[in-house]
Image (cartoon, rainbow, N blue to C red; front, side, top):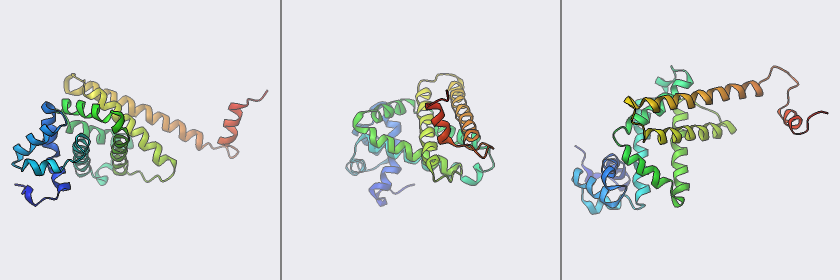
Length: 219
C-alpha cells in the first residue's frame, strides 16, 4: 500500500491522477474531484489540493502523464520493433484508448477544458509530448523537418480519434477502431506518395524546379 505521506507533491499528483479522473466523471475537473480522490485514498485533503495548484489543467496533465508512462511500460520499443510501423502506431493509440474505457465522461470534460482559449498553448504542448513519446517508442529517429511533421500528424490523428471515441456507443468501440484504421491508412498512403516524390530515380529531379513549374507552367 502506498504511503502517500512520503511522496513529494509532484509524486502525489501522479499517484492521485487516476483516482481524480474517476471522480471527474461526476464532479468535473474541479476541487471537488480532488477532495473525493483524497477521501478515497485517505490523503489529507489540504495536502491533496496543494498538488494541483494549476487547477483543472494540472489534474488533466497528470492523468495524461500517467497514461504516457503506462503505455511506455506496456509497449516498450523492443516489443514494438517486431511490428510494421503501421501496427506500432495503431497499437500505441489503441492502448491509450483502452486505458480510458469507462472514463468517457471524464475524457469529454477534459477535452472541453483543454479546448478553452486560455488552455490552448498548454494543451498543444501536452498533445505534442504524448505524440513524441509514441514516435520514440515506435523507433523514430528523424531529426529533420520530418521530426516535427510526424508528431504534428500523429497528434492530429489521436485528437480526432478521441473525439470519435467519446461518443462511440458501438460494440467494443468498433466505430472508433475503424476510424483509427482509416486515418492511419490515409497517412501511410501520403507518406508513400511523398517518398516517391522526394526519392525519384531521376538524377535530374529537383523539388524546387517542380514547384516552380507548377507555379509558372511552360507555355
